[in-house]
Image (cartoon, rainbow, N blue to C red; front, side):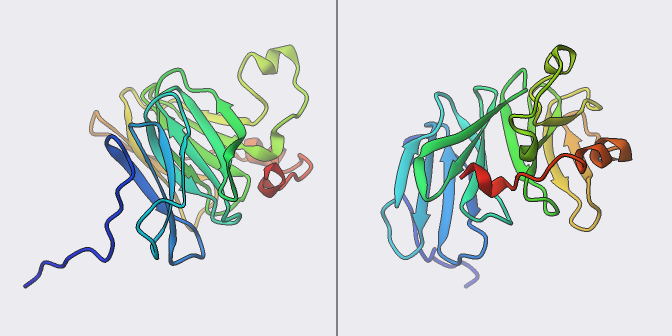
Length: 208
């Protein structure tokens, strides 16, 4: 018999569950998001939710824990935003990233830098963010391109981005796929992240 019953079944969402993510360093704690707009924290040792909050006024499509700061997580929602939460203070929105022109469908932290994450959307864009730049001063010209934490926009796709992944061995390199059957491997130019590394460090954990 190759089938096996689940170890645990969780019920808490009121609509389609879109994604789930384990908390780094924990064998028991995980989070899920869904079309009910909820972010739910679970502990595998109990059936009921640890916390259940309305995280967005729209569908929530993706959730990702920071691999360096385990209590820090990000969600991507259909209201075009990426929102940061602290698992220890689930009702508090730490920061909201705004840059997509349509639904945000995926978010993923860099495996190399605790303050860097990327998101994709129906707008055919992949946005790379650096939280160490939150609050940095901008010229009017720079501000017209987006908030200071918006580090880079990959606009090479001509159709909806269906998935993307960070290269685990090569910093600043990603692969992305789109609904027009195209797979792209791309890397940010040296001058973008070299200039970025000159910015005074503000660890992602400082947002907590």
